[in-house]
Image (tube, rainbow over all chains, first blue to last red; front, side, top):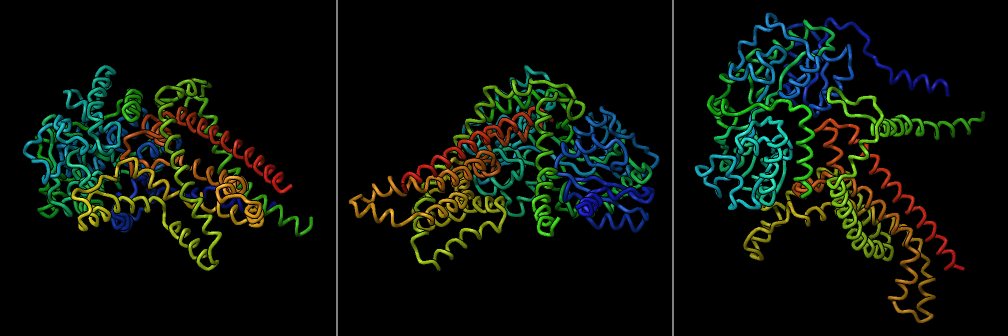
Length: 342
Length: 287
């Protein structure tokens, strides 16, 4: 019995108590990097990549919060988590001298409110959520505003994201407020406006909003640009419209957690990811828009010019990146529960 | 220690250790968290409170519970109606056909239920197999709206949970002593009488077991209603998930889990008592 116990314990004891100077611990979303990139990095630098994945920002946050040291060297949070982690002292400031390849990035994506002057984060992939329409049923020229979703003609044919922040961002923007509003009175107003939209909604979906469009279940609704790009391979009638009130933008970013084992290797990895050829490999493998302007130029013309994936500067400037709303998220969730149980 | 008893200790001990480490301990953490305070800067603050339980008994949560219960009850009733005649016929037919039918029922389990739910979408969507077929035969002129309705949710839940109802019913119908039915008929009972006074009471344990095995999962499942129903309403599962993933309110999510578990315990106790009663009932019948 004792022997079994010893074996059992040996099996579960952590094995990784080795030196970290030739290793870099990377924590990324699943399916979010070209595996060949990791091999190339290992071959060129001699640094071994220890790669793990997560499925949600919250899961990543919880894990990084618990690890006080010997954690990960590079993680990939979304914009609003960059802000929260920065505020809580969970990130190490970046040393720009060690990141010469940052010059390749799309300058329009830098210095956003979630991380002014990019002191802590480097954008990796990005995209938008705006209005999708099926041009067979809805004339795209008649749709210019989020308010068009409330048009009674589309009753029972509207899709909304199944995500409290995305849905409220849309309602708030249509009222002329920020997508990152924290004022309870304005959130209430946005909720009351959404209540009027609820009977028109056929489906809430944020796993793959293109599917209800392709299945002819909905004709108008919220969708990600990248999903429209993919949907167009099957049905070119799905069109993407940036509303005049502005779309919501998201970005996933590379950061160095405070629990890093080796900050030099972390910088080396991030800089490598900013190399145009590497960014192009990742972009082609993952399928989202790259934040790397040089890599974007190297893509084929059809992808590079697809407005759903790479918007004009005007549309980008009109939109807003999601930032952390702090404890106001409780108010959001309260109204979301009320909306869903009405 | 003899070799036999050492093996017995190991055979009992290792699953017990497994359950202790991966079920009991995590669950105790959930119970503990349900009495702690939310920490916006991290995960939980070590301040004991009953606030989470007070917060949970809000009108919104009660509506969420009601939605889940209606769905689970409806699913249980529908599966019972479908499964009972099927299980009954199953015990009456040739053994080879019976075995073949049982295998057919098990085969879908080789595929993940999530994937089977996506397959139902392909079947029901506006331009899916069913609508395309009906349109081409001229039976309908416009696609039927099935996907993202309550009908689709019930079809999905019943489809996924039906075997859990059939198997216990089949087991208890198989044990049914045919001579009792023959005797009743000889004494002049009609088929209806035989069914309601003999077959139904004797298979009550199977009905209760099947209903529990359908009702409890139906209460917690939320991906089938989300995928097939369009996520327009909120169920207990969604509520718990949102507390963990959206608001990072782990204590409130934990409290909701504890409440759900307690409800299930109450149901299981009821199940245990009614089965015992049903068994003592059939002792009396035999006497």
